[in-house]
Length: 250
Image: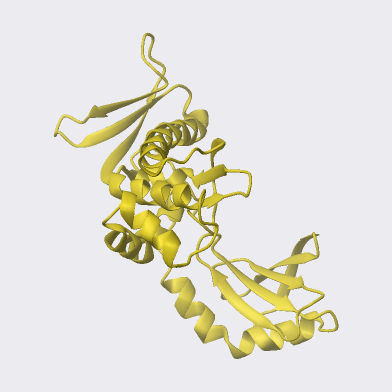
C-alpha cells in the first residue's frame, strides 16, 4: 500500500492521498463506532474510512490495503466528473444541452436557451468566462426552484395540504426532505432530470406534510397524486446518482 500523505485536518477528519488511488481518502474517528468501516461516496468521489476512537492511522492503512481492490472497482464505476465548462454537454429537464460560454453581449440575459446551427439544444452563458460556471449553476438553481414551486403547488392542492417554505440546495444524500414544521427542501439537480422525476420527488415530499414516515398510508398518498411513482423510483435508483457528476471538478 502506498504511503499516506496528510493533507489537512478538520472536524475530526484527516484528509489523505493514497498512492494509486484516484480519489481522496477521509479518515474519521467516531466515538460510537465499534469497528472500522469503509465506503466510497459516489456523490463526493471520496473514500471514507470510519474508525473507533482507539484505532490509529496504521490500522486504517492496513484496513484500506485489505480492501483496496474493492475500493478501486467502485471508484472505476463512478461516472467521470463533468465540470460546467465551455463545450460540455449537460442534461436540462432530461434533454442534453451543449454549454456555450458566449462572452459579453449587450441586451441579452446572463443565461439563455438557444440552439446551435445544427439544431442542437444549447445553454448560452454570457459574461466573463471565469464566472460562467457559477452563473450557470445559479441559473440552474433558479430554474429548479421555479419548477419545484409549480409542482409542489399542484400536488399540495390535490391533497389539500399546505407547505410552509420551499428551499433548493445541493443535497447529496437525498433528493428532498420535509421538516416537522412543513418546510420542504429539494436538490437543485432535479432540474437536470426528466420533468416526471422532479414531479415525483415533489409529490413525495408533499405527502410527508401529512405522513412523516414511509408506511402504507404515506405511499397511498403519494400514489393518489402521482400514480406512476414506481417508474420514477426506478429511474432515480438507476440514473439519479449520475446527476451529481455535473458541475463537479474532474
